[in-house]
Every structure is written in C-alpha cells, then in structure tokens.
Image (cartoon, rainbow, N blue to C red; front, side, top):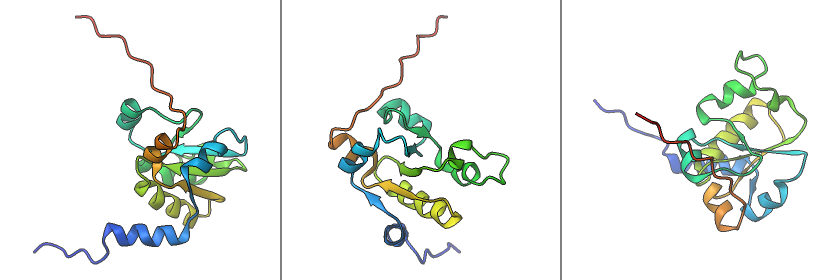
Length: 139
C-alpha cells in the first residue's frame, strides 16, 4: 500500500521561510564582496558546470551539508568554523531555504539564503563565473 504524504514540499518551504532570513538577490550582490560573508552554493556539480557560479562562492553540495557543518563529523570543513555570515543558495531558492533551516537548527549562525537562488541572482545582474572549458579527449 503506498504511503500518504502528510506534509508536502510547499508546507516545508513555508515553514522554513518563517524561520530563516531571506535575502533578496539585489542585496546578496552587495554582500558578495564583504569579507565577513561566505556565499555557499549547494547545487549539484552538474548545475555549476552548466550555469556557472557566483564568483568567490564556496561549493557545499546539499547532500553533504550537515556533515560538513558539524565539527564532530569526519567530513567537517573549516569554512564552517569561521566567524562569518553564511548565505546559501541553490537554483531557485527551494533547496537553500530548507538547507538554511537545517543548519540554523544545528546551531550555525548567522545564516540566510538568497531568495530566488541563482535565477534571481542572474536576473538582478549578479556576476557569474563560468567554468573553464575542458579540452576535448583525443582518441
């Protein structure tokens, strides 16, 4: 018998947005060069390869985020031990809203996410760094 979903994704997003700080893309663009802010890109590596990334952002894949944030984890990344504001983003702001809620509940602070994600960043005229093209493989 199939399970019944009692809380849908929209409810999860609405709940997260009530708990976290959402930063409009135009404001995030201004924060990008602030040495006290770390912009974290939680998208899949394939998304970065296709869409590019915010210059200077740190890639922290969503699937590893909680492990990278926790100092007790063998996967801890020192960037999360810095005394800075952590601003997360994904493609459209859904995953980053849930991720921001999760790390905030873990005790990481201050945290926020870019409302509308990379799509909003681009629409607001934010700079994008494209990956270098890889040379074609020779047979």
